Structures are given as C-alpha cells and as structure tokens.
Image (cartoon, rainbow, N blue to C red):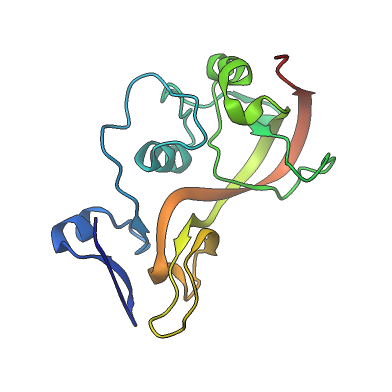
Amino acid sequence: MDLTITQDGVFFADPVWDALARDPDGALWEVWGGRPSGRPVYAAELQPDRQQTAMESLSCAGCKRPASRSKLGMLWVLPVLDYGEVTVWEGVRTVIPPMCEDCANEAKRRCPRLRKGWVELRVREAELIGVRGTLYPRPGSGEEPDSAALVLYGSADLPFVVGRGLVRELTNVTLVATGATVS
C-alpha cells in the first residue's frame, strides 16, 4: 500500500483504505492480508488487527476468549528481555496482550519469543499508553523512518506513525513464575 507523507502526517494514497485503517485516535495502522482469525501462529509478531482487538478488549490473542483473571490480576506471559535478567516488572510497557490459562501454557511451549525465557505476571492495571510502529519523519528532515518507535497518545508524532501494536503499561504487577523452554 502506497504511503504519502505530508506536513500533517502519513496517509495511505487510497483515501478509502486510509479511512478504514485509522483508529479513533487518528493513528494509521498497517494492513496485512488475510483475516485475524483461526488458531494462533506462534511467530514474532501478531497480525495488527488481532493484536489491536485483543489489547482493546483485554482478551486473549490466541483464542479471543477473556484473559485469565484472579485476585492478583490479569494474566500476562512476557519474554525475558534480551539485555539481561529483569527483576522489576512494574511499569513494563508491552505490545503483548494478556492471555487465558490454556493459551499461556501453549505459548510457553510453542512461541519462539518465549524459548529463551519467560515470566508469568498477574497485573491489576494495564493502561493503554500508545502505539508501536513505524514513525515517519517530517518531510524535508532528512531523517530515516524508525521501525520500532513507541508513540504515546497525545504526542505530536501520532499522525506520523503507522501502527503495528497497541502498547499497555503494566502496573500493580505480581511475578508468578519464570521459566524457559528446553530445546
């Protein structure tokens, strides 16, 4: 899909696709082929429509059922970060939606991102804070697009991002378990 970048932001060249691919906050979203349905494919990234729906509704991206909840909060399974062991998960920002118990157990076995290690968290609060995607520079700046940008809601950069994932900030976090898949 062809993009146009103006002083007002980034747009799909086709105005119909542009209108269909915008969220209520004005962010433009990547459009992938296929439908965000069926069994999950354990890959590096979720289909943007499926990810966005799961994050907005706090449902499991694997099966679309409600995420698991307990008195400690909602269930999240996240990969251990590449830059070393993290012992504080409070305030972590993630594009990974919460999960139901069944999909969490399956993901721990099958998801490539969890093979090096994972943490299971229970989270009481998970505020939507922004969009992760490709941030395009203003025309004439000479800068290159940033394909892994986090653009917070309310930012002047929001019209210049093409989103791949909603981001939530996890607070009131309880670490429940850690592990790694044995290869």
